[in-house]
Amino acid sequence: MENPRIVIKKNKRLLQIFDGEKLVGKYKIALGFAPLTDKQIEGDGKTPEGTFYVFTKNDQSRFHVSLGVSYPNVEDAERGLKNKLITAEEHEAIVNAIGKKQMPPQKTALGGEIYIHGGGTESDWTDGCVALENEEMKEIFDAIPVGTRVKIEP
Image (tube, rainbow, N blue to C red; front, top):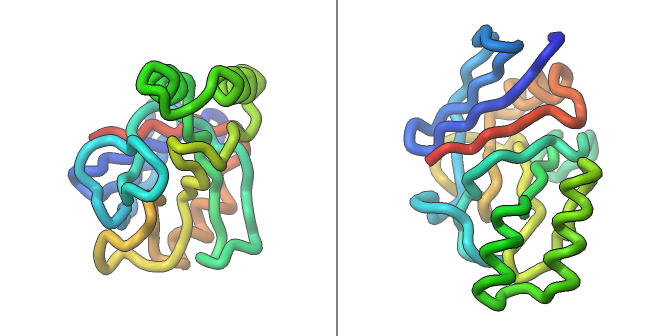
């Protein structure tokens, strides 16, 4: 693929892969155990919404293989700072990481460690991640490079 991107439609439990504007794959997904609305804090079981990127690929994941999603993003950091959930230093660290397309801090009150991974799609069971069937996750893992844009819609 020349210009891959991932679109996740939470309400349809659907992950789509595009190459530019061309749809090249559709997959059934499972979400966090409390999937309605956007992720707010660590442990809420919600899958985040917004625009992210793949910051890492993990072939040693306990859920088969996985792609790290750059949550929290700048908008999450702004909300967290405004609501006094994170410090100014944490906000700055998130903004700097996103600006450099690196891994944002993963251990803040906003939560972190959001991945697209295997493990199955029987029900919404993750802590906020996006889960697929293992075989489909391997297919995506092999096709998607670090830096790929990920849009998670309600």
